[in-house]
Length: 97
Image 1 (cartoon, rainbow, N blue to C red):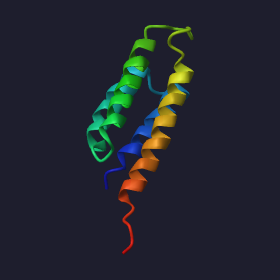
Image 2: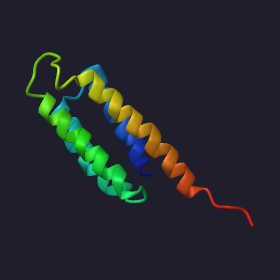
Image 3: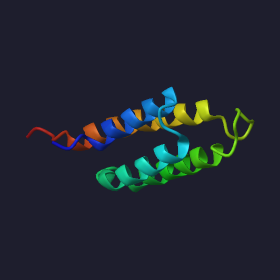
Image 4: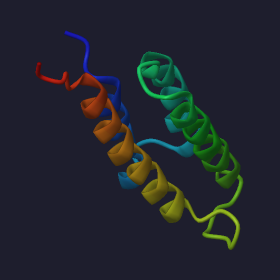
């Protein structure tokens, strides 16, 4: 059984947090998973791609900088994941007649 793309993305995010995955590899993996998230509104994809672009850009810095805080970007992706999961659950809920 294929894991839920949001769960797979959350696992990859945890690996990024722990240093087991670098920003570029996380971003590449997340972009692959994004194609399986077509059930979410288009805006979710736009926001995710924007966050991934910033994570890739932050890889150029070895330390935290004012413009690219890796920790803040990771937390932003976590917030995106939380909202995407709520949106996915809401869209799967069917009204009772």
